[in-house]
Length: 349
Image (cartoon, rainbow, N blue to C red; front, side, top):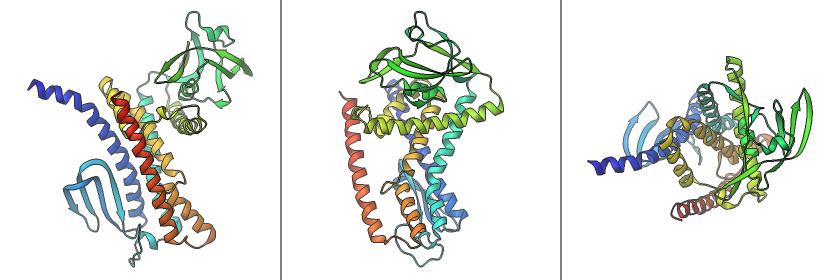
């Protein structure tokens, strides 16, 4: 019995991680499903998981399935990837309907992100700001020109609206030196070469933030404002991460796939389940934004072709679109395989 408990204790955090991914993907597919149903498109099957069937229920027109492998799910619409004579098939709908249905999966991920951010903020006694409240003893940033009551609005040319922006701006700064713009006594003030101590984790240098920020009281208005601002900050972090990766600021070692993210979620779950909410928010917003990118094989790639169709007033030939999506899918799978291999290698080195 002791051995069983030992195994369960080792496994449950990773089961939680799998559940997190499953929830995010189900939300995405449910967005497609709901939009299709509301717009009159026939949905043949809605499934949770892949592989062998565990349970199924035949609705009026849709087969609902629960499958054995809990990695993903799908919403199979009539005429989604091939022609169909059914007037309710996806392929026979007007472009605007197909656009809404295709985009709604990512939109549902973003809506979930907003909800998770709101839940996370509701646990705070005060909402974080970007205004300096006090410094640690012998803080070198204070010696470099930063002062109490400075509201930080920009770091190294990037806007700072929330503590999330602040945290990311202090990532990847090996020399600990940043340029800041603050609001001081109501005036915009530029601070050059503000110095901080740094620490390194997994090859990435982080600024050791030697000051504390003010919190502000929670009201309905401040909660709504902070929820949207924080979600926008997550989007901004995702874009800046992509830019920094492509520019060479971070190496390939900083990229994580499903295995790496699962390991991280498992570690967080061991410490405190409530801490999963901001991580889930970041992942679901990431999933939503990534799916809207105009890349082949993603929802954004399909949206791109629909927008082209709406502009030229005729559909792009299916054979060309199919080839582009197929090539894109192969490239995506190869990249995922390489990143997954890197993640697994990292676990054992």
